[in-house]
Structure formats: C-alpha cells, structure tokens
Amino acid sequence: MNALILTGSPKGRKSASFALASKLAEGLLENNVFVSHEPVHAGLRTEEGTRRLLDAVDGTDLVVLAFPLYVDSLPAPLTRLLELVAERRTRVASPGTPRLAAIVQCGFPEAHQCDTAVGICRLFAERTGMRWAGALAMGMGGSIGGDIGRLPGGGKHILDALKMAAESLAKGGAIPVEATTLFAKPLMPRWMYTMVGNLGWRMQMRKNKARRPLTYRPYSQG
Image (cartoon, rainbow, N blue to C red; front, top):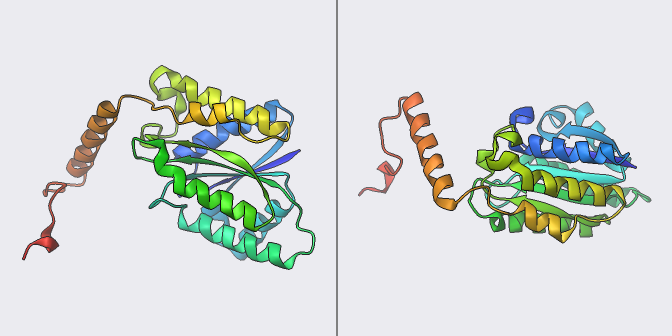
C-alpha cells in the first residue's frame, strides 16, 4: 500500500502539522505502508511541483491531509490543490478511488472548532469519488510547536491516537472513533492554555516593540 501525506502548513517542518503527520507516517511505515510526504505550499510554487503533487494523488492508495485551521477552513494553498485535484478527476476516465483522511489542529482550546474543516474534507472526498477514511482533530495545537514530546505527559494520548489510526488505515480501514475521541482530548486545563497563550502574546509584543495593548482598536473610535 502507498500513502501520500500532504502537509498544508506554511511553516513546513517546524509546524505542529508536520510533527503530527510525521508520527502518523512512522506508524504507517511500521505497518508496511510506503509513505511519501509532500509540503503543499512549496509544491504549488512551480508548474512542475504542481504536476508532481497531482500525479502523486492519482498514484496513491491513501491521501492524508495534515493542516492547521485557518478561519474555520483549510489553508489557501491546500484549498487550491484540492480544486486542482477535483478538476483533474472530472477529466480523467479512471482516476482511481484512494481513501482520504485528515489531521487538523487549531489554536482554539476546543477540538470541535475543527468540525467545519473536517466537513469540507469529507465533502471533497464524496464529490471526487474518493473514500472518506475519517479525521483526527485537536485543539490547543499552538502548544505543540514542532515537538510532541514537549507536551504534558509526553503527549501520550496524542501518540496513542496516531498509532491507533495508522494501524487501522494500514489495514484498509478508516480512523477509529476511539482514536478520534482520544486525539480530541484537551492537552491541559483550559485556564492554563489561555494563561500561557496570553503570556506568549505579551512576549511577542515586547520582542517586536509593540507599545499598544492587544485590545487597542484605533479605527473603531469616532
């Protein structure tokens, strides 16, 4: 079996999406699945890169979209790639029926904030003749950085969910409900995540010499 992981984060290898996708890839490899990993942003910069991405989608058994939530949806380059895939599949007589799965993470505390993006991926699969294989969605993605091991408890429940998903996908199945539930489990108490996030914002303000408070709205004053 061949699997293609498409990472939609512009941060590339430093992103939380890449870290999560890499752990899934490790699980797939352990289950005798050949895995190729492609960054969407870099690939779409040239015609050759775009053609390579489209050919890779056509020639694989499993496509996994790994991306951060952008305004309740997918990052623009990843959306563009899906548009190109849909266009090609309407023109090709026998495009095949690969399975499609997704890994979504967002900076909000709640995993359900990713529901709309997951729905978009599921609808894309249905409209293009692919087989929907489920999704893993999580909140508090901003705390991952590029290293899952830095999470509280070493990110054990995240790693367990990814392992469970990889084993099922390698057998031709879909991501189990148990894995989806485990993956969505909060990484830490909400108050702690909010406190650390606010501290991070203030540190960025100081680093960039921003003198205005975060709540400053100069254009809303009459």
